[in-house]
Image (cartoon, each protein chain N blue to C red):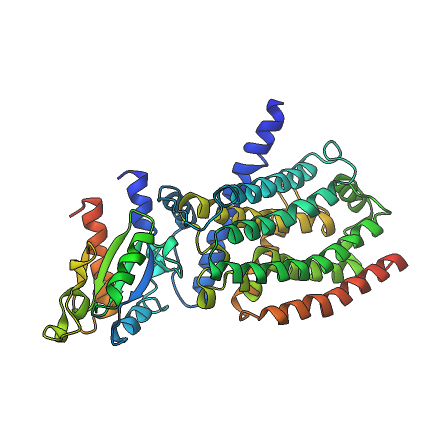
Length: 304
Length: 141
């Protein structure tokens, strides 16, 4: 019991992932600044933002439904904490942790932060927030389809295993799925879906600062906004690690460079693309990405 | 210096409020946020929503129509929140001192912490003003 609590709250779960996430978001801001020929913020800037937000006043709009407004940040944070705990534990202690079907549980838990944003923003009663919510819902529906289809590829290639530990063990015995054609295609699709799940620039229309202020976060202030920001930063750790686990033989402390590679891909995509419109995003995910995912599944069935 | 004060002064998110200015100060504010001056070094970023703001940059001459709106925006901001009056019109009344529609400088409506005069003030002047504000808040000379 104590060990489980320790796992969730401190070591691979909440605190550890949050620290790595803060470091990753500093790297993101610093590289963005260097790309724009600036100096960029000091290393403690993301931490300072969180501390500052958590000591500020929490304002609640009169038209908000209060329970949901306060509850939804917690939903997102707890979901992403669970995901990161699952992924870290199955990689650090292979074979001993996890249960059959934990990939499916992680799939649902990864949707929860977006659902939490949708619930909280629609509870705030702001018209711009509801505009952001409608975009977020469309985006979730768009990227979940290719995400789930390309998740089938490692399951098929490992012979129907639904446990993260089994998939890592299979890859350790037979080589990474990324070395096969279907694995590469599914991995590329997953990277695009990851960008949309993180809400970063080509797909950040739900919180487009220049057109609908902060969109879904417009009414959130203080501690609640800090929790949403923390959820985003932790998702920036949990999602790439989940992808590495599925396609790239998993990781340990020596092979964290794989995470750095994925982080660099995220940052470069964020800095070299403009924001797309929501109809373009839906067309992109339901058209090209879904076709590529289906192609990857067919190739995986044929054994490529 | 305690952590609370340090966090508040190291991460200032500014909200840009124009109360009917001639847009000259607004353009200079946007200049201040460009890569040339790079205020993100000090943790200063522009936010779109007043709920995220730590500092409100007020530009322009307050006229009768904008006074209730400015008050409403200030009440919506989460405290602690500082107000920075930018430009001659917002600090005093500028060239509209004798105009019939410009009865108020900003400090008659909001508690102003810093005045940055100029028509328009340079980005360097704004950064200097914010540095003076931080020095006053943290008690350093």
